[in-house]
Amino acid sequence: MGDQKRPLQPGEAAPGFALATANFDGTVSFADLSGRPFLIGFYRGLHCPFCRRQLEQLASVEPSLRAAGVEIVAVINTPVERARLYIRHRPTPITLLCDPDCRTHRAYGVPHAEFLPEGSHEQPEWPYRVTMAQFQAARINPTGELPEPLHPMEANTILNANDRFELTEADHAIFANHGTQLVGHFLVNANGTIGWARIEALDGPNSLSVFPTTAEIIAAAGSLGP
Image (cartoon, rainbow, N blue to C red; front, side):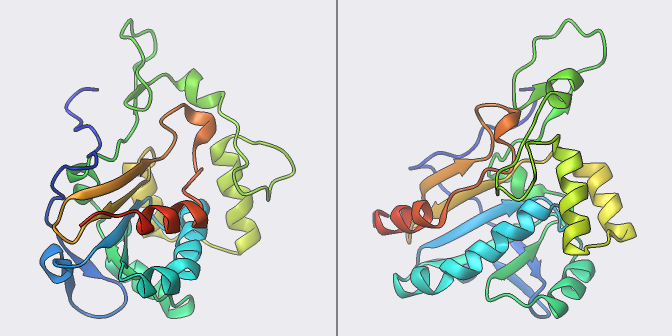
């Protein structure tokens, strides 16, 4: 596990943050959200088609959560200028925060995989320490859009082409630096403690890009404590 922090669990205090938002000029901080519950999702950059789809899913669930008094914010691993360009063409009701360095992901303990050197005798520990062979063997089709389960990189290429999403220089740079970042979802109670948490693919790389469903999110929000 190295120096990575484990994912935060229900009952633990949620860390503060202040991040630039893609929706408008300025920042949104933990203090701005205090006193009411909120769902916060931590995603890879916009280069990830599955993360873009999850943002669309959050937009569809936003009215239900808002009616229950729960706000939604999403943190993406994308520079704010790039994110603003994207949502100019794909507007969203979700407050979209930008963390190109993944510092907030780290604060909440959302894992990022680190590849073991070839020939290493260190024991793999998914999702923290992985072998290239372990990753290369992964096959995914979480949304059912692919003709068959494919390697995650191949799946990304196909879906980005289908979406006509062209990676910019900023997207390529983020992928190069944070390509193995995982995704995490947390519900934070009005008192600032974690009430529910889900981390992507804890059971192995074949579960990459499998995220909470709309029903799971609504159920979790409905069971939040004070």
